[in-house]
Structures are given as structure tokens and as C-alpha cells.
Length: 151
Image (tube, rainbow, N blue to C red; front, side):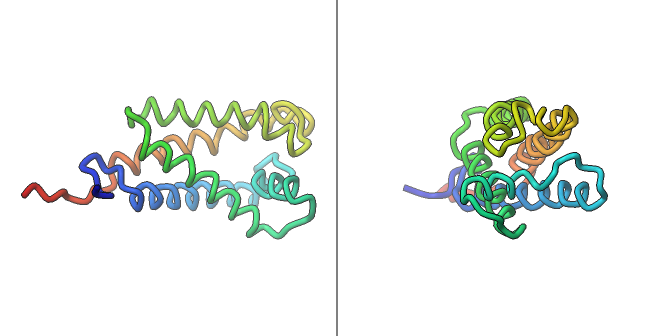
């Protein structure tokens, strides 16, 4: 069984897309936090890592959690979604955004939809998910696929 498929569903390609999406979303959100525009009290992935491990951690640990989470969902999309179009990518992003609002924020102590911190977390958390969906679709649609051997 070949790992390379004509539909561009190979494991290396899926993981590569995940790593690129993870890097780009982290850069955008990091820049917004650095500029003081972000309403988050700390990077959400770092807050999650600290909650799970029950101790204070350096930012690289949060970035590792972010990378694993984003890459996982990119791989699921690229490898297993039957339809890989903009609508499906944005649908996945919207579903993950709802999970963040209803499960993730309460787990880290920010309340349902982040209302324990403030209502600005709702649209602020939508931005990285929207960026995730657009990048995921764009990279999957436009990154070259390895040509298949037709002989």
C-alpha cells in the first residue's frame, strides 16, 4: 500500500500542512499579543498546558501544545475528510471554535465563552480559528501534490 495518494492525502504532506498552519497562526497571535491588542491574559495554549500539568510553564511548552493540537486537526482534515473545500475547512474551524468557547475556556478557568475574563474573548478567539480554516484550505488546495506513477 502506497503512502502517497493522487488526492494529496499523504501523511508527510498532511503533517507538513499542519506544521505550517501551526507556525503561521502562532506568529499572528504572538504578534497581536506582543502589540498588546490581544485580550487574552496569556496565550491560550500555554494556559491549557499549565492547567493540565498544574504548574507554571515557559512559553515554548505552550507552543508545543499549540503545534500538536493544530497539526492533529490539519492531519484529520487532509487525510480523512471526504470533502476538502473552503466550506468544509471553515466548518471544521467553526466547530473547533465552539469547542474552545464551551469546553476549553472553562477548563482553563476563563468561564464559558471566556466571559470570566470578558466578552472580547469571543471575537478574539474567532480570529485564529478563521485564520486556521483559511490557511488549512489554502495550503491543502494549492500546495503541490507529489505526482503519481501511472505505469
